[in-house]
Length: 449
Image 1 (cartoon, rainbow, N blue to C red):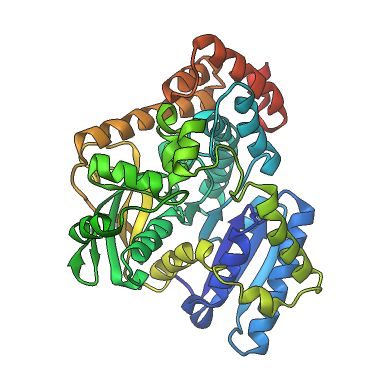
Image 2 (image 1 turned 60 degrees about the vertical axis):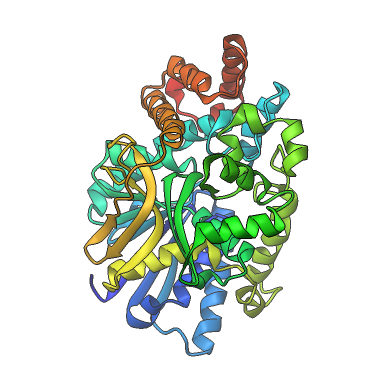
């Protein structure tokens, strides 16, 4: 790769990801050793300008401290123009924005259907996929003609369905990344009184329902330590861990990344008020990044930094800001600088990485990364029951992708039935039609022909 590295962020209005990515890139070895050109792209001119102004003020801080010399930040609304010469394309788009996300959860809620996040499975995950698949494909087609050698790293949900669409339908180098892997890493370290760097783990499955197959803590096997610690003090109580430990006791493996995502894969068990009380989980978007109350302070901080009403120095020292974007920064460094690394969980074409899941599916597994690209590890087979649960979801996603590409409502209905949230075929039809009408402005016209 040449001296100049060009990185494109599509969906630059992403509330937590864009600032963390910029901070991670500015502090990276890549920025010290190369000319780094970062292009922010978004369809919303107001939020694009806010992120651009905040980013330029961050750059000014680092340049004053002489930590940054050859870092350029640009903004575009024209995606095709931005993609020219791209080496890496990072996708964090949210079609319909936060408003569509609330419709994904609130419309099913009127039918008595709870979703703790609604961005992966459930009716919300299904309609999120229907909104995003056409746009992701447009991006990929543009890359095929403008920057065919570039890497695409997708962060948008539903991760498995979107990444599978890109791999199945295009020839670009497409991978899916999720910050959830770092969440379970921190969780295990905290529970076992260790620093994160003292924990090594092997995780495999599909996005938002992976399983810790093995882990090492301070050089010792992790599961015997977990069993001992659990006997001494029990598992976590309430939100962030109680449900995770319930499934660990049942399956003998720790699920990942966190209770709210995991619970959605078992709707009749955990998406109800009784389970919410027992495990301390929110059954709607409350306390998530989609919660307006959670978003407001972050939005205010970003806007104030952009307008010069808050110092960029304060912004850069905000604890945890680097967590969202640091994973992809390390991946880009490994490829651009040929610094071999083991990435703990990346969404890839399975191709026998997990032996008893379909070869054509997308799975989340560890991978070595270097200048030659991404090299997934073979982790063997999963326990039969876990493999069965995941295979069901993999096939559901495949039906959903077909539905999106054909604008076929019958296939959407079949996806809803496979999904496990609806109680009857009549309810599924009514819910589907209501969601199509409510989200019409973000869906292709073919659905309504």
